[in-house]
Image (cartoon, rainbow, N blue to C red; front, top):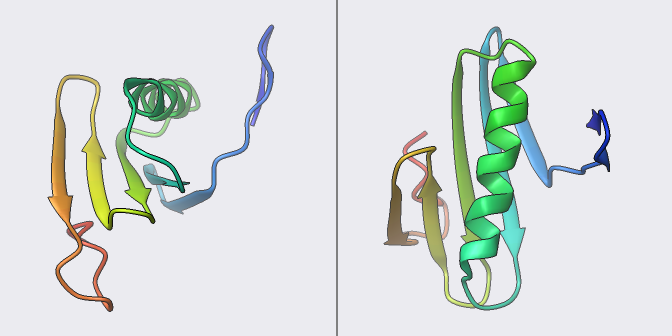
Amino acid sequence: MLLPEKGERRIDRLITNGNTAIVIDFKTGDPTKKDQEQVRDYIQWLHKMNFVDVKGFLLYLKTNQVVSVSMTKTKVSKVKDENQLGLGL
């Protein structure tokens, strides 16, 4: 994404369908609050781009944790099955 006054941001995975968007950011290190802030920033920008329903996820490869990120809350879960990332999709 090219953002005014912030330059360029690269979302690892963006899935869109109509006015719905899903952001997935892959991380190799340990979970941090900064990671969640990054995904929240992506969510805000996608809302400004007229996506109505935006969901954000962090996928930690080291710990197999999936973190659901929204503007108000965060939910952490473990990957239950190698074929399902626990994204609720």
